[in-house]
Length: 135
Image 1 (cartoon, rainbow, N blue to C red):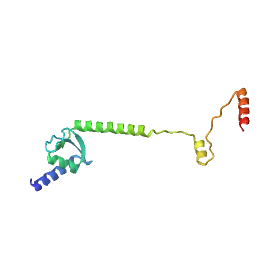
Image 2: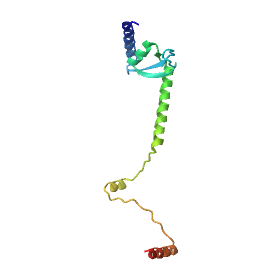
Image 3: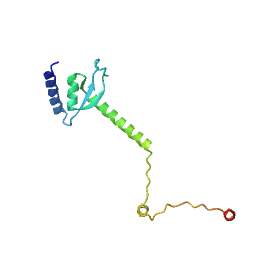
């Protein structure tokens, strides 16, 4: 292999890709390669330099617009699934308080309200006698 010709081809491809991809992102699709045991049809995003390298190596080609749209749609779906999984894993809870409660809580003057149980008169009388007897 002539390295000078390889790098000349790579630099020419890189210059071409830089003109067509001003954002620096190039979408390429893999080709079947028996030597590298690669799967054909996998689309991915790459930098201009990496895209030029894999295209020059003959393992990838520029992706069509349909392949790019499908890749972006799949990435968005995977991103949503990962975010949903993370939310389920962390079990986030949001508590809303009004401004007066939050100010008093930060100043240490706010007490959490405690529920008070009320007993009927008969039970309260017997309950008081039991607790007095226990003392």
